[in-house]
Length: 223
Image (cartoon, rainbow, N blue to C red; front, side, top):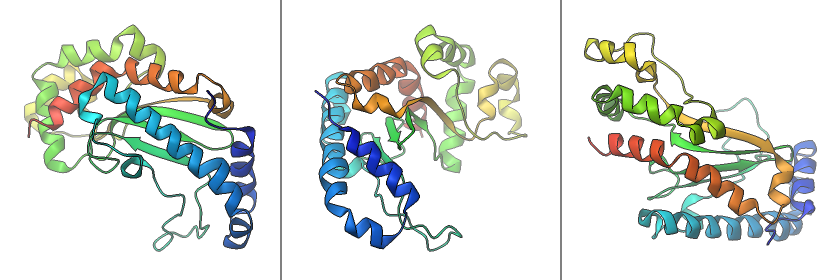
């Protein structure tokens, strides 16, 4: 079953070219029928598929996961009122939980699928680094596993130049311990969202990250 029709991508392309409230108001019905509502259904189906694999997703609802299309422009020089993409962070506790769940994002041109620990508080980062330092070769092996490597390539994120001395030996084995963020992302053509197997494709990426996700979750929950 296809969740989206070509009109969804067309709307996002036109929104990028006419990002103002008047245009959006004139096309609100198209947004609701072709973009917002299908995305909500899709996220609901993703949650169900995640729950089949990990019971922790059972109590999550689409409203806990979907990011608003309205931009917060209060502190930004860019005053365009709307995002030109759809996005959702599907995780136990919802998009703001910090759990390394599943992230899906697409605009008119590209689809992004990923996950991991993007926003990591200082105390959580220390605990996660302790978790990696205790088993640096194990983390290297998870990242180097063929399924993860083929899907994502590597762990991404900003890094520290210096880290506490207690982690320096582990950093010689696993340089990822220098990271302040631990996320992974794949990029595909946006036309993928129109295919009947779109849900299956997203879940293939979710499955490819399973062991890395579980390792990061264990580290974040150790604190």
